[in-house]
Length: 293
Ligand SMILES: Nc1ncnc2c1ncn2[C@@H]1O[C@H](COP(=O)(O)OP(=O)(O)O)[C@@H](O)[C@H]1O
Ligand SMILES: [Mg+2]
Image (cartoon, rainbow, N blue to C red; front, side, top):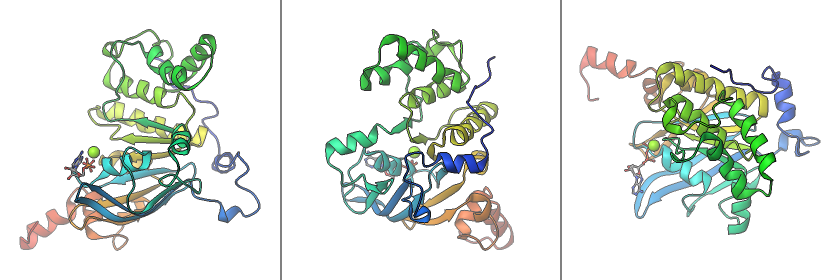
């Protein structure tokens, strides 16, 4: 089996921070640099059904932000708003200080070129080889020649540990490898932002762990800003620099912070701690005085 190969995987945190602003946005007014992502007072709804309101959070450049919460609370919906699959009616979403939700269709499309998205199922074309799958966005969005495209495809597949699997079809590889191939495709256009919806769904614990390691390596070596929807606790504690918790009952975001801090007593809403402790709190309470769930 091949190893994932990533350029300078040992980039020190200081390098990462430097790498975060190669475009010169960082500099004189260092602290006033716009956040990579800013969500302001967002309301999410399907028709008249409000999923969640008053969502406010920021993501720093080169950070892994995890969106957590129970099933059906609106995690996937939030991702859809963030990548522009649902129109923002109330609130605003900004990338690098520029409004995404209020941008013109052309401008929005230009900003979306900076997004790589890995959907839950990986969504590879089954009739195409891995190389053809990864080449697709390059053929669609660039004017690169076949030779250059093939070179980029090989680099991207090597990046996710799939060097040598170029000519394989999705059905010929494991679920974890398919996820990584999907990631290679999401990375094809060197996106500054990566979005994952439940990346470890359906993976065995080792493949899931390997995907987590890969996410962290992309963050550290490429400075990619990464947003991950997941409810897998092991992943949450491994990859999150920051997180938000969506609560379906109140239709509000009720916590933001590093999960390792949020799980400490008194540092977040008991519901959030209970989630992060896998129901330990409500279980204990039930045992002692049998209250409502
Ligand atoms: N296309 C849709 N139309 C109407 N309601 C939807 C649609 N997609 C999701 N919902 C509803 O919105 C809520 C949030 O869904 P979703 O974002 O998929 O939750 P999660 O990803 O956290 O499990 C749920 O109540 C779900 O039933
Ligand atoms: Mg979902």
